[in-house]
Image (cartoon, rainbow, N blue to C red; front, side, top):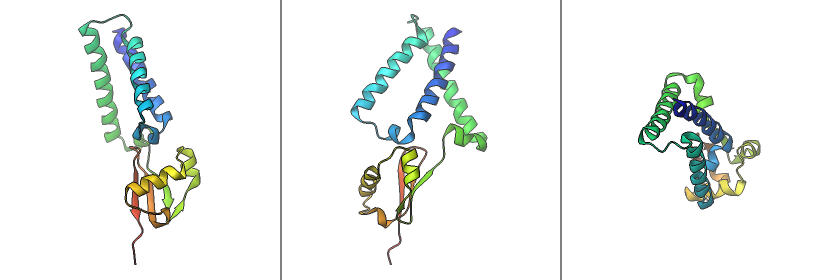
Length: 148
């Protein structure tokens, strides 16, 4: 039973940690970030199961995480008011070619990163963007201006 309780505590901890890390960081993992996530996973495992290496202990831990994830997903689906807390909300970072610096700063995105993401979407200049939205997944959606 203590494995299930530790799984709940660690799930909440990881959930809060990922929310604090920011969506942009999670959507663009660099090799070092991947290694860091593996190390975090190993450290979590040690705190989760302590010295219990049994199959039953692993099944309890994984089953608890799965149940918590399904429950979180259900709450996100069922209760619209919880979505900003569980998932966040989209943030406009460019409007009519004008970069919204305050939103970029809050999300720790450099203008150069934004321009690079635009170029990857075949948009040559930020001036050519009607809207750019940082989605809850961490991706940036671009809506180009209509050409006349």
